[in-house]
Image (cartoon, rainbow over all chains, first blue to last red):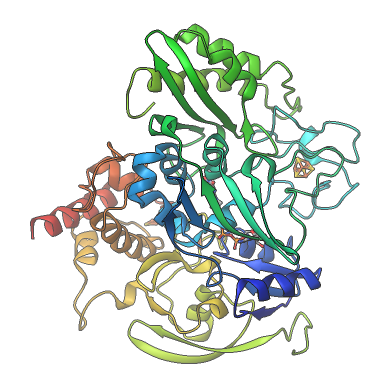
Length: 340
Length: 185
Ligand SMILES: Cc1cc2nc3c(=O)[nH]c(=O)nc-3n(C[C@H](O)[C@H](O)[C@H](O)COP(=O)(O)OP(=O)(O)OC[C@H]3O[C@@H](n4cnc5c(N)ncnc54)[C@H](O)[C@@H]3O)c2cc1C
Ligand code: SF4
Ligand code: FES
Ligand code: FES
């Protein structure tokens, strides 16, 4: 691990000023992603700026009827909040489906969003990886691709290819809830839709998000969302608990009589960012809440899907898995069950 | 700032109260709470399994909450209170969970055990405080009176602690006994 100085500025502005001015400085929150990456030699900051005491650790009622979540709120506390559980069940379920009890006690809202989009090769310094070392190639294309993308990835040219996925469960729920992310930069505060925070690899896979170096997430705002009262998170993984998603679905629907009148859908484990499934949403609205509708909606979203076809196992298995998971999640909601 | 050579590093002074005893120490900023305990203070009950957050062997209570000491930098926890499995019992007596692990044979090699027990202590407090898990049947319910823990709840909430010996069934038995003893109390 490279040596680093440790700083705890007096306030968020001070933290932003320090990191903005120093390309080798980094924010430290719960440390569950960053400390691991320091140890792997993947992150090599010369200064760590601890922001755990500098952003809000409160969840507050917003004037518009929504909720505002401080970036310092621990994942466990967000999941346990009564208002989140009752009004945004998809978010509580997604939080609780992620990581472990210990990790959720440590991880923060800001850190969860800003954890690296990654894959096993990204974390192995002995292998080529365009995200870690631009231009070196993508090991996943010929390697063990299982947690990798089927949507929005860059397969060629070889020197910018990247098929990694963003691992956050929380972010998939926030995408379906139309959350806004408040960001403090050297020039002041701005608010951006969660669905535009993370980016697709395009020709620049080293960048996970649209944030500039030194921009600090200070809060996440949830708008009021009556439809979210009936929402769910459905996660498919390799073991029953404590595993990253192969595929996950965050969903909310409103059914009046025999017709779906409104639908929100986002997918995890399929792309470099939480994937808001707008084509599927369009296919759902106006249709009857049947398995045929749900499957057709999933297929509409997958029209442009391109799995990784690796000799050591690719991601083609995710196409039927997405369809099955979307169907299961929506069937549970349409049936009025609490859990899909 | 100090010399930033890989060997010399940057140093920081801090204090940690471990199992009720306060220690002042000077550590390289790269030192985790786990290494501060084991390498600096010779307190070895927290174990290093993976050093990557994946196994739970290093679980301690940090300011009362179960935490992975391998991913916690010591400098970031200056002034904190750490409880390891060593410090759970009062006055040399075993903690009820330690007794239950003995009674139920909830280990084989014992390497994961201190982490399992610290995790279980933290987990029971979380459930009593109304923290749900992903298998809690009604997430929207009023949980202020605490969540009742059946075996599925216990297994889910303990899933951050791996046991390579596979003592899981007995671990759930041990935690189950204490969970229901505490509720009955
Ligand atoms: C074994 C293991 C299993 C896991 N399983 C899951 C899982 O199943 N599902 C899941 O969703 N996650 C999982 N995770 C990931 C975990 O959720 C993240 O590591 C955690 O949420 C990161 O939060 P943190 O506060 O610890 O961030 P840190 O590690 O402190 O920081 C992460 C990154 O975010 C930056 N950062 C932190 N705070 C801010 C801020 N306010 N503004 C701007 N940048 C910031 C840091 O500079 C750093 O680059 C797992 C992690 C581990 C170790
Ligand atoms: S998928 Fe992306 S992160 Fe993984 S090896 Fe390829 S370039 Fe690197
Ligand atoms: S040693 Fe900390 S989780 Fe494995
Ligand atoms: S008892 Fe051997 S690892 Fe759990």
